[in-house]
Amino acid sequence: MNRMAKLALLGLVLLVGAAAWGQPAPAGKNLTVGILLVGPYNDHGWSQATYDGLSYAVAKVSGTKMVYVDKVNPADRPGTTASQLAESLVNQGARLVIFNSDDMSDEAVKFATAHPDIFVIFLSGDTTWKEGKNFHDLPNMVCIMGKMEYMKMIAGVAAAMTTQNGKIGFLGPLINDETRRLASSAFLGAKYAWVNFRHQPLSKLDFKVTWIGFWFNIPGVTSDPTQVADDFFNSGYDVVISGIDTTEAVAEAAKYQAKGQTVWAIPYDYKDAINEGKGVSLGVPYFNWGPAIALAAKSAMNGSWKSHWEWNGPDWKNINDPDKSAVGFNKGTLSPEASAAVDKFVKELAGGLNLWKGPLNLQDGSQYLSSGQAATEKQIWYLPQLLEGMQGQSVSK
Image 1 (cartoon, rainbow, N blue to C red):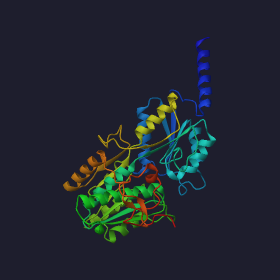
Image 2 (spheres, rainbow, N blue to C red):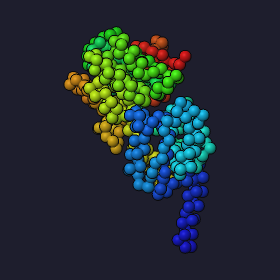
Image 3 (tube, rainbow, N blue to C red):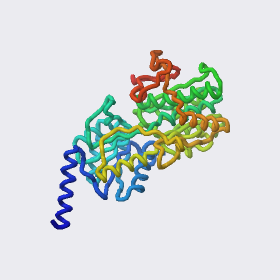
Image 4 (cartoon, helix red, strand yellow):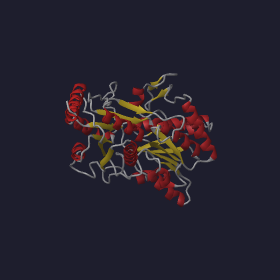
């Protein structure tokens, strides 16, 4: 058998093997990765964090290149679905397609089902979590999420150590499992610092959540995040923690501080978002998608791909390690006392501190966790309400 015949036979074996495993054939030495971004690729928030994550992977994994479509949402691309736009990436040669937003869940499943020969990554979802509520048996898909809960707790600590009156606002996107647990994580961090570091009564901590209705502003559809931030500052809240994809909270804080009002904000998602509000940004909890995407790309290329769900935590040796930590927190304008408290809290988390532990009640007063009971991953992921002590809607009306 000559060399060409051997190579052809090897290719046939790989294809047959992939079919037997129920997953796409390995991509080999070259892989085009396409990504669908819910917002602009340079939004200084969620979409830029995921765009940069894929850029990192392409730089690290030899033989890869990227293509992308951004502004994948009903306002920017009316009448066009995410699965249709994914098709356009395949037409550009993509063998691996990334859906970057929770609201693309149904479209990601539709596309992965229709294209069993294409590798699919769904960021932030639970579609491939066998123990989860939304499991689909899709051999060509993996789901990746970072344990942002830890970083939101750190943001809560920074906010509680900085506020001068105990009034902290949370600028939320739409209401779902993810956003409830992240807003609640920020509250848990703020509560912990307020009581344990500042030694203040919990009754004097005011933590309010206002939702805009989507991940970023869609005029005529969502509440205006600029106005929501202004409402917080105008009603006495001196720290606003952002949970949306874009940076209105820090932009407004900077305007108010320029007018002489002492206020601060904490942006979200993107490690350099603190630069949007120099002097007013206390820090930023951010995602570092690159290492996980790089591993997934390698597995698509070398044949080790296996459908799974991953919820990746920080590297406690260095939460800002760009090659190891899935989530991080960049400090901004913090007082020496607040900065020391953040450092202490990070060390306590690294040492095993668990704020998702009872006694904890839900917002309506019903028991969530009994005394000493640690929440399971499912209890955290599918948090049904905000926690007791938080103001704001828990479910959409």
